[in-house]
Image (tube, rainbow, N blue to C red):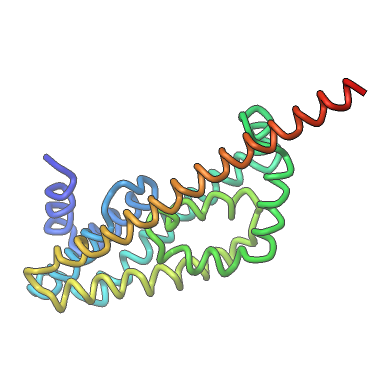
Length: 211
């Protein structure tokens, strides 16, 4: 049985709580397509097989539950382990970790809120929040608010589109590919710039040695 069939059976068996479980798992395993599950829940509600408000509330609860698990994963790793991992990674510097911590300290609240509406980062943003030990009440409130907006938009779109609910996943799939492409470009830029920096530092060291 494929994932879509499994989620369909879960919703038919458990109703709105089944949709909540599916979205909790999507948070833990980002490749699972919430862009399909949420409109599917809306379509199911349009058929009278699920309460619309319950679908929104349960999926939001599922989002918060999945995000909380990843938050605790980040807290378990902690700053010291992250720094130890960075120290062993090629092309990484501890200053990169320091800059990330400084950035999250300034923009963490907005990132957690708006990140809930960005494919892929929806799940991943919970880990640095845990690493930085973002106050849990604030994390839960911002996660719930951002998830409520995202889940409501997709569920209502599925509700309005009816049998054409799959169109939501098709168009949002383009957005996901764009995000992945931008991340890939950022990684390439980081690697290239760091290799150039290493080469410059090596040239400077050799020049100093000749003197």
